[in-house]
Length: 217
Image (cartoon, rainbow, N blue to C red; front, side, top):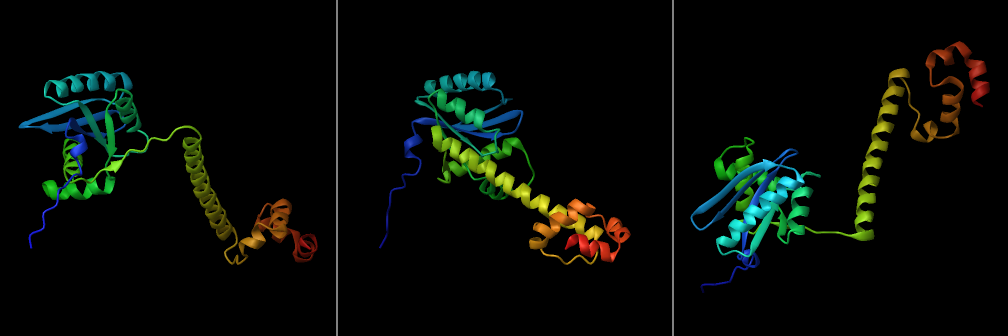
């Protein structure tokens, strides 16, 4: 039996001109299609420039029968936020695409893994056609602060691990036969070793075994 289903993935944006953006720190590369025409542009990643370009592109969309713009971009840490924030403020809709999906589909699209901004924006639009976009969630108030604090906490936790690994590396360089566990290093004995000898093996040797043993006890 033939099974026929209706695909509704992008219907909500058929009334909007979909524009895909490749985002970098200083530049935005735009690509879109409607009918037999394509839209391509490159401009600075600055708020006043983005506003001016989106006004122009919105006018183009309305003259072609669209009600507005639908902006697509990869999440690039912080550089995409200016574009999406400005687009939402001007009344346009926004969505994200997965960075890894862009990288893999680029090979399919052109059999080439090379990095070009024009190619990336085309691939981003292709992901939208396939219905492979992500919701651009907008958080406000206390929940936004909570997410930001959680990000800072994760960064600090990774930095703590890096510092501890570096301390362990230095100890192994100073004491080639060092076998103490972290319970010793970060306990009373480890703190005493740091306070009395600065973890300097030469100072330990000069102190002599008897004096060293008595002081550590």
